View 1 (cartoon, rainbow, N blue to C red):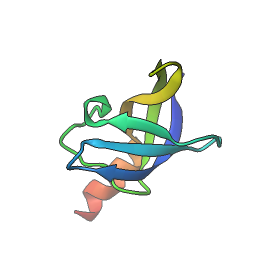
View 2 (view 1 turned 90 degrees about the horizontal axis):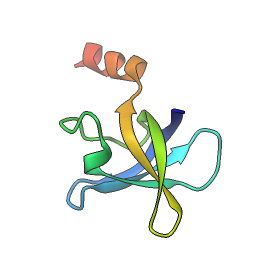
View 3 (view 1 turned 90 degrees about the vertical axis):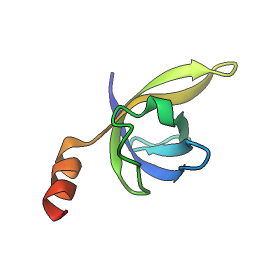
View 4 (view 1 turned 135 degrees about the vertical axis):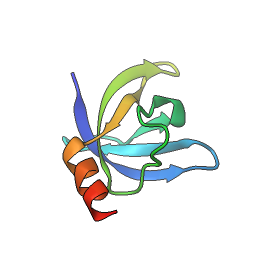
Length: 79
């Protein structure tokens, strides 16, 4: 099931970041390989859909991140 959240931070040098779930809870880590549009670098505040996977002894991570289509279209119209 896809959840939604907003990017808290992303470090392009390290290729990792965190996303804050809209439904609350602890922020989830993600890595660049989990971004579906690898060319688009996420920015703080961007809304993304994601799935979760248990890693590192059961800690949830965000995977299959995709930028919210409405936000993506709005950014393309601005540019």
